[in-house]
Amino acid sequence: METLEIQVNTRQPGTKHQARRLRREGKIPAILYGPKVQPVPLELNKKEFSTRVAGLEGSHLVRLKSASTTLADKVALVKAMQYHPISGEVIHADFYEVDLTAKIQVAVPLHFVGKAAGVVRGGILQPIVREIQVECLPLDIPEFFNVEVSALDIGDSIHIEELPMPEGVTAVFESDFALVTVATPTVEETPIATAATTEGTVPAVPEEKKEAE
Image 1 (spheres, helix red, strand yellow):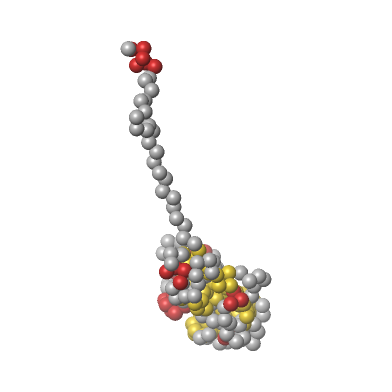
Image 2 (cartoon, helix red, strand yellow):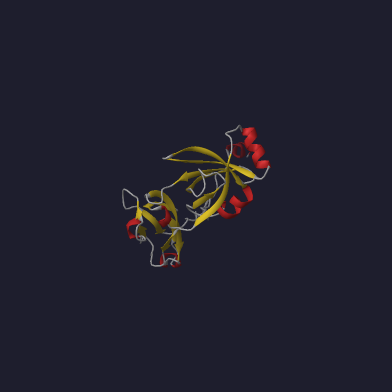
């Protein structure tokens, strides 16, 4: 996996007001944490982070570049990002420091490629999961997995045990669950309208009409 370099600076822990001020200045508040490091509040360049990292799919490693000797060249996983509910812009990022020699568990997205034979015959391709958990060294994290679906007929599925894994990467699961299937098409029954009266049947005369006669 490619490691992206990101410029960071330390900051003093602050209030929501101070976080809003940072964002107005074109920065994003962030935090670095991990099993061997005390949480360190950071600030990032909003444009750099949004352009190079925020829009990427899957898990990504970043190498921190900083004037601080305690932060320089640390490698971290982008663990989480918070987004503005209206604009969709990143407003906070969490970095998890990793040891490049120790395995970690991360989520890797699935890409379903090809056109299933069952879809050609009218079936519906139904992805059951969009990502799976794997365990590997940080530099071995796959960007994504291609799941070839062309051979699937109606009723067929691909299970996690059938997914090829690169060397050094292990899928984490407790049962052999399905990743994708081709479902039988559902046909809606068209209701048949029935006539209120049949031909040759004389409708009943209302009681009021009988009395009038």
